[in-house]
Length: 455
Image (cartoon, rainbow, N blue to C red; front, side, top):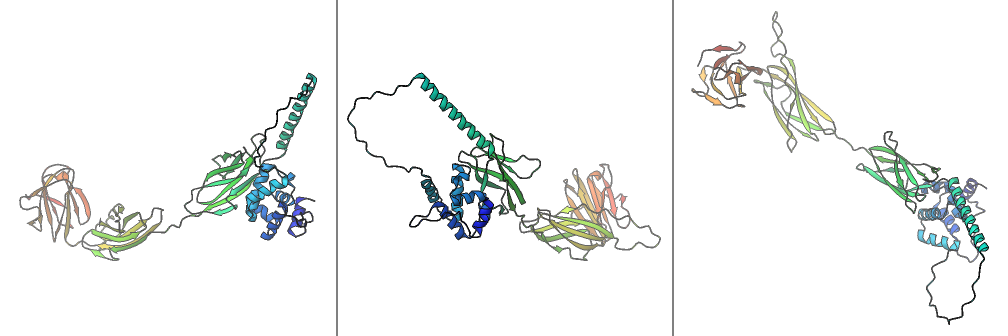
């Protein structure tokens, strides 16, 4: 009768070859294993899947037929794992197995009483022929035993089992980056673990003298597949069964940033190009403001050429404070503009809002900045000397920025024209001359800037 037939009969409750307890006798180990499995309510195939021990080995242990098991080392490992699975005391099961095999127990030391000295008897004498014959016999027996062991090893492939994880499919925490696999195989065998990565060799570890092995494997997010088998280093044989494991590391939930814009309001109109952009964001590492020109404030009259659209400023980052607020000024020329504020998270998630604004300058707005070197400045606003510079003028260091607003005109006298830069009604004019000489420039839009003799 095959193992599969015995398993079916065991599952259905008809087990003629199962050991029966003798009247008034203690329960044998095979009976205990069989009864414990029946109480657990599982068949041998289910126990095979749960313990990773082949059904024919489980059936052999329940019948007490230990000759079908690979050897004493594997039998101990199988009995320990099976006892733990069935809820029995593993140490007690192993002790009962030793008793039923007839292994001697530890005997307490006894006191040896001295005996009277006796005359030595004549020892046995052996001829040289008998000695040589005995040595040859021992050599032949030893060689035969060696051949038997080698033939047995070459005939039987190594076995392997995985004890950790306890199941083939495991869901881990989303922070897991590695896992240590553990199990039992042939002492000294090489355990190979393939994770399916094409450009990486399988993990390999050597089992201890007890057959125990462990290996730490790397994990990536998602499902990780590992195929585990054993290799006998002396025979090169692989284990008949390859154990497949699935370890899943879930992906973390990524939330998009939140974004609110306080300024500018939708459809707001500004009389100069200084547009304040303010708001709040969460879960964002950067906020960037981009602007796109939509058209002029006043349509071009019939017969007049349409002016070229102004160049849009480069995207401008807005620093984020600890409380999530951000603020950044934006300089724009006259016209209709669409401002897009985009908040981005570290994971690449983005949230964007758009505000449409109009810049319609009233009068004259002149921004003067000193760059590269110091420059002396004197300014007239609508024909009167500005209080910022005074009648004698002032010398300003590089980086200084002055803003002047007038109804009709702004006139600027500079001691170094090449170091003085102008922005008129949001339009960047740069410096008016490459020369470092003193010059005076009159700005009265819509007329073009012109040089004067005012000092």
